[in-house]
Length: 107
Image (cartoon, rainbow, N blue to C red):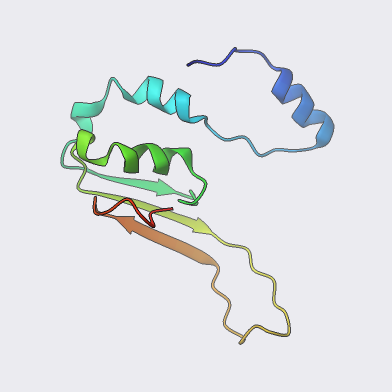
């Protein structure tokens, strides 16, 4: 279902100083339905997308076989705070590759 095209959310975000806007799943679904054949045999790279929260990653993983994808890759920056319990090794990135296996544990 498409959402109403109003700027109420933008005005609210401006007041709260929030700049995090994510493409909604329904918008991705409505647009990409026309391009299924172009994805066959291809890899999709979701750059700067955390696969645990990305609607693009969720959409492509749910429709992986329908699109005929070879693989789905997501990578993102992970901000970590050093604390007294850390071992001194801080990872700043996250990378996930999905090849169409079981959907359990994808996110």
